[in-house]
Length: 294
Image (cartoon, rainbow, N blue to C red; front, top):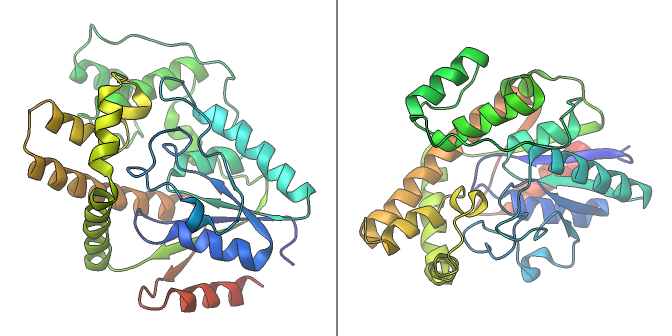
Protein backbone atom coordinates (compact mmCIF):
# COMPACT_ATOMS: atom_id res chain seq x y z
CA UNK A 1 0.00 0.00 0.00
CA UNK A 2 1.28 3.45 -0.88
CA UNK A 3 -1.46 5.43 0.86
CA UNK A 4 -0.04 7.78 3.51
CA UNK A 5 3.50 7.21 2.30
CA UNK A 6 5.82 10.10 1.50
CA UNK A 7 8.09 9.60 -1.50
CA UNK A 8 11.40 11.42 -1.69
CA UNK A 9 13.32 11.71 -4.94
CA UNK A 10 16.95 12.55 -4.36
CA UNK A 11 20.26 12.55 -6.15
CA UNK A 12 22.72 15.01 -7.64
CA UNK A 13 21.92 17.99 -9.81
CA UNK A 14 21.20 17.22 -13.46
CA UNK A 15 20.19 13.58 -13.00
CA UNK A 16 16.47 13.89 -13.78
CA UNK A 17 14.79 14.34 -10.37
CA UNK A 18 12.27 16.92 -11.63
CA UNK A 19 11.10 14.72 -14.49
CA UNK A 20 10.80 11.64 -12.30
CA UNK A 21 8.78 13.57 -9.73
CA UNK A 22 6.26 14.56 -12.38
CA UNK A 23 6.02 11.04 -13.79
CA UNK A 24 5.53 9.50 -10.35
CA UNK A 25 2.90 12.08 -9.50
CA UNK A 26 0.98 11.15 -12.63
CA UNK A 27 1.09 7.44 -11.81
CA UNK A 28 0.45 7.71 -8.06
CA UNK A 29 -2.09 10.55 -7.98
CA UNK A 30 0.52 12.65 -6.25
CA UNK A 31 1.66 16.23 -5.86
CA UNK A 32 5.22 17.50 -5.83
CA UNK A 33 6.85 19.37 -2.95
CA UNK A 34 9.97 21.33 -3.81
CA UNK A 35 13.00 20.68 -1.61
CA UNK A 36 15.47 22.96 -3.35
CA UNK A 37 16.47 25.88 -1.14
CA UNK A 38 16.83 28.24 -4.10
CA UNK A 39 13.50 27.54 -5.77
CA UNK A 40 11.48 28.97 -2.89
CA UNK A 41 12.52 32.39 -4.24
CA UNK A 42 10.89 34.29 -7.07
CA UNK A 43 12.70 35.60 -10.17
CA UNK A 44 15.45 32.96 -10.19
CA UNK A 45 14.05 30.57 -12.74
CA UNK A 46 16.60 29.47 -15.31
CA UNK A 47 19.61 29.44 -13.01
CA UNK A 48 17.85 27.25 -10.42
CA UNK A 49 16.39 24.89 -13.05
CA UNK A 50 12.91 25.67 -11.74
CA UNK A 51 10.17 23.54 -13.28
CA UNK A 52 8.24 25.33 -16.03
CA UNK A 53 4.48 25.24 -16.51
CA UNK A 54 4.94 23.08 -19.58
CA UNK A 55 7.25 20.64 -17.78
CA UNK A 56 4.86 20.34 -14.82
CA UNK A 57 2.13 18.91 -17.08
CA UNK A 58 -0.57 20.08 -14.71
CA UNK A 59 0.93 18.41 -11.64
CA UNK A 60 0.70 20.74 -8.60
CA UNK A 61 4.10 21.87 -7.30
CA UNK A 62 4.35 23.30 -3.78
CA UNK A 63 6.89 25.56 -2.02
CA UNK A 64 8.06 27.29 -5.19
CA UNK A 65 8.15 31.08 -5.67
CA UNK A 66 7.22 31.83 -2.07
CA UNK A 67 9.54 34.74 -1.36
CA UNK A 68 11.17 37.87 -2.70
CA UNK A 69 14.93 37.84 -2.99
CA UNK A 70 15.51 40.07 0.03
CA UNK A 71 13.43 37.89 2.38
CA UNK A 72 14.96 35.39 4.79
CA UNK A 73 13.96 31.71 4.80
CA UNK A 74 15.48 29.24 7.24
CA UNK A 75 15.60 25.48 7.56
CA UNK A 76 13.03 25.88 10.32
CA UNK A 77 10.70 27.73 7.93
CA UNK A 78 10.98 24.96 5.37
CA UNK A 79 10.44 22.29 8.01
CA UNK A 80 7.16 23.86 9.10
CA UNK A 81 5.95 24.65 5.58
CA UNK A 82 6.83 21.22 4.22
CA UNK A 83 5.12 19.37 7.04
CA UNK A 84 1.98 21.47 6.56
CA UNK A 85 1.93 20.66 2.84
CA UNK A 86 2.54 16.95 3.47
CA UNK A 87 -0.43 16.78 5.83
CA UNK A 88 -2.64 18.72 3.43
CA UNK A 89 -1.81 16.45 0.50
CA UNK A 90 -2.38 13.28 2.53
CA UNK A 91 -5.66 14.61 3.93
CA UNK A 92 -6.87 15.12 0.37
CA UNK A 93 -6.15 11.48 -0.43
CA UNK A 94 -3.08 12.16 -2.55
CA UNK A 95 0.58 11.19 -2.34
CA UNK A 96 3.30 13.71 -1.34
CA UNK A 97 6.40 13.49 -3.53
CA UNK A 98 9.34 15.54 -2.26
CA UNK A 99 11.80 16.47 -5.00
CA UNK A 100 15.03 18.40 -4.57
CA UNK A 101 18.71 18.38 -3.88
CA UNK A 102 18.90 20.27 -0.58
CA UNK A 103 19.49 17.35 1.75
CA UNK A 104 19.29 19.37 4.96
CA UNK A 105 15.79 20.55 4.02
CA UNK A 106 14.62 17.00 3.44
CA UNK A 107 16.16 15.80 6.69
CA UNK A 108 14.62 18.63 8.69
CA UNK A 109 11.14 18.04 7.28
CA UNK A 110 10.99 14.28 7.74
CA UNK A 111 12.99 13.59 10.90
CA UNK A 112 12.47 14.46 14.56
CA UNK A 113 14.56 17.57 14.76
CA UNK A 114 13.40 20.66 16.69
CA UNK A 115 14.49 24.14 15.66
CA UNK A 116 14.16 27.43 17.43
CA UNK A 117 11.35 29.27 15.68
CA UNK A 118 12.98 32.69 15.56
CA UNK A 119 16.53 33.25 14.41
CA UNK A 120 18.63 36.08 15.75
CA UNK A 121 21.03 37.60 13.22
CA UNK A 122 24.75 38.01 13.90
CA UNK A 123 27.42 40.15 12.27
CA UNK A 124 30.82 38.61 11.60
CA UNK A 125 32.39 41.43 9.58
CA UNK A 126 35.12 42.05 12.14
CA UNK A 127 36.50 38.52 11.98
CA UNK A 128 38.71 36.79 9.44
CA UNK A 129 37.43 33.60 7.80
CA UNK A 130 40.13 31.58 9.55
CA UNK A 131 39.01 32.89 12.95
CA UNK A 132 35.38 32.02 12.20
CA UNK A 133 36.33 28.52 11.14
CA UNK A 134 38.31 28.00 14.36
CA UNK A 135 35.18 28.96 16.31
CA UNK A 136 33.13 26.51 14.28
CA UNK A 137 35.54 23.64 14.86
CA UNK A 138 35.38 24.25 18.61
CA UNK A 139 31.60 23.99 18.74
CA UNK A 140 31.09 21.50 15.90
CA UNK A 141 34.10 19.22 15.38
CA UNK A 142 31.99 17.01 13.09
CA UNK A 143 31.32 19.77 10.58
CA UNK A 144 31.90 18.96 6.92
CA UNK A 145 31.98 22.60 5.85
CA UNK A 146 35.13 23.66 4.02
CA UNK A 147 37.20 26.21 5.94
CA UNK A 148 37.18 28.67 3.02
CA UNK A 149 33.40 28.66 2.58
CA UNK A 150 32.77 31.74 4.71
CA UNK A 151 29.03 31.98 4.07
CA UNK A 152 28.39 28.42 5.21
CA UNK A 153 30.70 28.86 8.19
CA UNK A 154 28.75 31.95 9.23
CA UNK A 155 25.43 30.15 8.85
CA UNK A 156 26.69 27.21 10.93
CA UNK A 157 27.81 29.56 13.70
CA UNK A 158 24.47 31.35 13.63
CA UNK A 159 22.69 28.00 13.75
CA UNK A 160 24.60 27.06 16.88
CA UNK A 161 23.94 30.38 18.57
CA UNK A 162 20.21 30.14 17.83
CA UNK A 163 19.70 26.46 18.65
CA UNK A 164 22.46 25.81 21.19
CA UNK A 165 23.41 22.72 19.17
CA UNK A 166 25.84 22.27 16.28
CA UNK A 167 24.37 22.03 12.81
CA UNK A 168 25.84 18.56 12.30
CA UNK A 169 23.47 17.20 14.95
CA UNK A 170 20.60 17.36 12.48
CA UNK A 171 22.41 14.77 10.39
CA UNK A 172 22.40 12.44 13.38
CA UNK A 173 18.65 12.58 13.91
CA UNK A 174 17.44 9.17 12.77
CA UNK A 175 13.79 8.92 13.77
CA UNK A 176 11.50 9.32 10.77
CA UNK A 177 8.17 10.98 11.43
CA UNK A 178 6.65 9.68 8.19
CA UNK A 179 6.48 6.42 6.27
CA UNK A 180 9.02 7.67 3.74
CA UNK A 181 10.43 5.95 0.67
CA UNK A 182 13.70 7.39 -0.61
CA UNK A 183 14.29 6.99 -4.34
CA UNK A 184 17.70 7.96 -5.64
CA UNK A 185 18.72 8.55 -9.23
CA UNK A 186 22.30 7.85 -10.19
CA UNK A 187 24.59 7.48 -13.17
CA UNK A 188 28.31 7.18 -13.77
CA UNK A 189 30.46 10.23 -13.13
CA UNK A 190 31.42 10.83 -16.75
CA UNK A 191 27.80 10.83 -17.89
CA UNK A 192 26.69 13.06 -15.02
CA UNK A 193 29.43 15.61 -15.60
CA UNK A 194 28.67 15.70 -19.32
CA UNK A 195 24.99 16.31 -18.55
CA UNK A 196 25.86 19.09 -16.11
CA UNK A 197 28.02 20.79 -18.73
CA UNK A 198 25.33 20.41 -21.37
CA UNK A 199 22.63 21.69 -19.03
CA UNK A 200 24.68 24.79 -18.29
CA UNK A 201 25.00 25.48 -22.02
CA UNK A 202 21.24 25.03 -22.42
CA UNK A 203 20.54 27.43 -19.56
CA UNK A 204 22.64 30.03 -21.33
CA UNK A 205 20.80 29.40 -24.58
CA UNK A 206 17.48 29.70 -22.73
CA UNK A 207 18.35 33.15 -21.36
CA UNK A 208 20.43 32.69 -18.20
CA UNK A 209 22.64 35.67 -19.01
CA UNK A 210 19.64 37.96 -19.44
CA UNK A 211 18.06 36.66 -16.24
CA UNK A 212 21.29 37.18 -14.29
CA UNK A 213 21.73 40.68 -15.76
CA UNK A 214 18.21 41.62 -14.67
CA UNK A 215 18.96 40.45 -11.14
CA UNK A 216 22.37 42.15 -11.18
CA UNK A 217 20.81 45.46 -12.21
CA UNK A 218 18.26 45.17 -9.41
CA UNK A 219 21.04 45.95 -6.94
CA UNK A 220 19.95 43.14 -4.63
CA UNK A 221 22.86 41.23 -3.11
CA UNK A 222 21.04 39.01 -0.64
CA UNK A 223 22.13 35.59 0.56
CA UNK A 224 19.30 34.08 -1.48
CA UNK A 225 20.74 35.52 -4.67
CA UNK A 226 24.42 34.99 -4.03
CA UNK A 227 24.17 31.41 -2.75
CA UNK A 228 23.00 29.53 -5.89
CA UNK A 229 25.58 28.53 -8.46
CA UNK A 230 25.27 30.55 -11.72
CA UNK A 231 24.35 34.02 -10.52
CA UNK A 232 27.39 34.86 -8.41
CA UNK A 233 29.72 33.68 -11.18
CA UNK A 234 27.96 35.84 -13.75
CA UNK A 235 27.97 38.77 -11.35
CA UNK A 236 31.76 38.45 -11.30
CA UNK A 237 31.69 38.64 -15.09
CA UNK A 238 29.41 41.69 -15.04
CA UNK A 239 31.79 43.33 -12.55
CA UNK A 240 34.63 42.80 -15.04
CA UNK A 241 36.59 40.54 -12.71
CA UNK A 242 36.55 37.47 -14.95
CA UNK A 243 35.85 36.71 -18.59
CA UNK A 244 32.56 35.28 -19.83
CA UNK A 245 34.20 31.96 -20.72
CA UNK A 246 35.77 31.77 -17.27
CA UNK A 247 32.42 32.46 -15.64
CA UNK A 248 30.75 29.66 -17.61
CA UNK A 249 33.53 27.23 -16.83
CA UNK A 250 33.31 28.17 -13.15
CA UNK A 251 29.58 27.45 -13.14
CA UNK A 252 30.16 24.02 -14.64
CA UNK A 253 33.02 23.25 -12.28
CA UNK A 254 31.08 24.25 -9.17
CA UNK A 255 28.00 22.31 -10.31
CA UNK A 256 30.14 19.19 -10.71
CA UNK A 257 31.60 19.61 -7.22
CA UNK A 258 28.14 20.26 -5.80
CA UNK A 259 26.85 17.05 -7.39
CA UNK A 260 29.62 15.11 -5.69
CA UNK A 261 28.69 16.60 -2.30
CA UNK A 262 25.03 15.74 -2.89
CA UNK A 263 25.87 12.12 -3.56
CA UNK A 264 27.86 11.95 -0.33
CA UNK A 265 25.05 13.50 1.72
CA UNK A 266 22.24 11.31 0.41
CA UNK A 267 24.26 8.10 0.63
CA UNK A 268 25.23 8.84 4.23
CA UNK A 269 21.95 10.21 5.56
CA UNK A 270 19.10 8.23 4.02
CA UNK A 271 18.18 4.63 3.28
CA UNK A 272 17.95 5.21 -0.46
CA UNK A 273 16.89 2.80 -3.18
CA UNK A 274 19.22 3.78 -6.00
CA UNK A 275 18.27 3.48 -9.66
CA UNK A 276 20.59 3.80 -12.63
CA UNK A 277 19.01 6.28 -15.04
CA UNK A 278 18.41 5.27 -18.62
CA UNK A 279 18.75 8.66 -20.31
CA UNK A 280 18.05 7.19 -23.75
CA UNK A 281 14.71 5.86 -22.56
CA UNK A 282 13.70 7.57 -19.31
CA UNK A 283 10.32 5.83 -19.38
CA UNK A 284 12.08 2.55 -18.63
CA UNK A 285 13.59 4.08 -15.52
CA UNK A 286 10.16 5.27 -14.44
CA UNK A 287 8.60 1.86 -15.13
CA UNK A 288 11.21 0.01 -13.08
CA UNK A 289 10.70 2.34 -10.12
CA UNK A 290 6.91 2.15 -10.24
CA UNK A 291 7.06 -1.63 -10.45
CA UNK A 292 9.10 -1.83 -7.26
CA UNK A 293 7.15 0.64 -5.16
CA UNK A 294 3.69 -0.79 -5.81
